[in-house]
Structures are given as structure tokens and as C-alpha cells.
Image 1 (cartoon, rainbow, N blue to C red):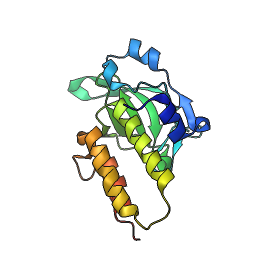
Image 2: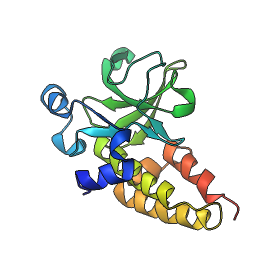
Image 3: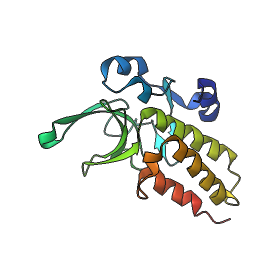
Image 4: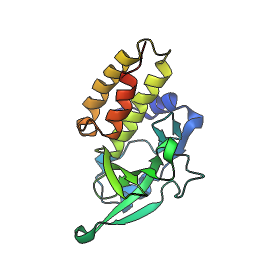
Length: 178
């Protein structure tokens, strides 16, 4: 477990945004253990995550009721986006399970990003540490493999599929020439 001071140091105090943790704990069915213990998220994390949705189609923390046909509906809350595609690729909290899913708005796709909201914040924390320690391409691939091992220990499910969001992001770092 990472404490709030460590998150603030890694993400920098001026690069965080609060999220309605207490409200969501009361309102959503997701178990309390699925939530991070902090009530803030990073605003911007390089190429992997952003909570800055000012010019996107949906706002941060927007609610989405996704119709799933005979299976009913899926209640989601937007917790961020892919920086390069803020209008279409959104990180969403599944209000029932606590999972983080990547929603492709235009094509309606859903992909598991993390098995819990807490795991997403841990991944972003370790990714921030990786970025802060980066001194260029020399040694980056080896450090990326070590990061993969750390992240797998946090949330094996997020990296089980070689085509998952985190697997692809890490593969790009592991292929760094140096």
C-alpha cells in the first residue's frame, strides 16, 4: 500500500485532481477494497493517462449507462482518458465491480485495464516513478522489464493479455534502444 504523501510526491501536488471517493463509496456497489485509499488522481501522466478532459466529449466523472442487450446495463464513471485520444478512449470505473475498463466510445469496445480502481492508481504511481528516474533510452528496456514485474505483482489480470492497454504500453518501453 502506498500512502498519500508518496502519491503526491510521485505525481506532484500541482498535478493532481480530487475525485469523489466518499460519494462513490456510498453510491456505487463496488467493494471498498476496489478504491484507492487516496481521494485524488494524477491530472496528467505522460502518454498513458490524463484526467484533463476539458476539451473532450465527456467530462471527468461523467456517468455512463451502457446498454448491454439481454445482460442489462453497465454503470460506468469516467476517471480519465488516453491522452492522444481523449474524445474516444476513456478509462471508466465499473460501478458494480470496481474494475477499470477502457471504453472506445466510437466503436463501443470495452477492455479491462485494471482489476480495481486501486490497482490503476498503483500502476500510475509506479509509472510516475519510472518516468522520474528516466535518463534516456540507455537502460530503459531493462527498467521497463523491472516495471512490468512490479506491475504484474500488483495486478496480474491487467497484463495477462499481450494486447491489453498496459501490455502494449510496457512493450513500447521494453523495445527502447539504448
